[in-house]
Image (tube, rainbow over all chains, first blue to last red; front, side, top):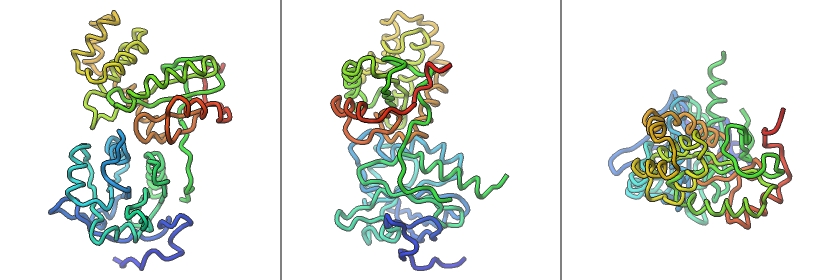
Length: 174
Length: 190
């Protein structure tokens, strides 16, 4: 399989700075628990939703990760794997996932800090956290849809579901 | 394939006959809340919505839809079904008020107590809860919320557009009056 080209080039990012549709999703392997790693390549052949978010423990009911957790059956119907990513460490992710009863992996983009977020153009250097950025990847690992939300606004799931359905329609013509 | 970078989340299902509503059906302004009976923020929002309704009077049509976050709120789905079961007996809003006024007591015995207090047909209420009669309806509310961009609870749609930011009575009232009217209500149409 062809190795991904260098990423973050001007032609691969839109006006928002995040990687745009058509760009190859940069490969990564990150810890989701202290002794478990997840590689993006494991999900080749199915759509993947990458949800970068600033931090665990956002102080509202139904934050972004909690919302996706409630909607997992819908994502499963569309054969999509959801991965949450932030710069929080594995112990923090573990406590957060347990408290919110999350049933999908949270990946620790922790060391080097934010390295994966930077490759996707989704890192805020001043604050040292990820943007609230969403990527839907096709089964070949190419970005099909991306969206950068204002940092304080949880984007919800409507855009992701629309993108996944549109992807499904595009890859399985009637 | 190109989907725009900037998106405004809009209510996909306008207020309709199916909804539980307060206020005036032909009002120029509409407010839709997606809420969860076990969510403390929704509990805070409960009297605020009443305040907004009293401020705008006949100019406002309000609908409440269920958005139970069942993984973090173990009683939320059941409570929503209880509200619907009460609604089937014409007592949605009295049950809605009781649930929000007693958010820490939403177990089955509590729900039964509220049904008794509201003088409901208890046999029917218990049967409908046991048979999960109203679960599909609650799920339907939930999915219309997901499709409309609900991003937590409570989420408000002011004149059909998701309201991001503070939702105190002042801010909500101003937002309702400031947004140009859009045709979001299908009620009263032939």
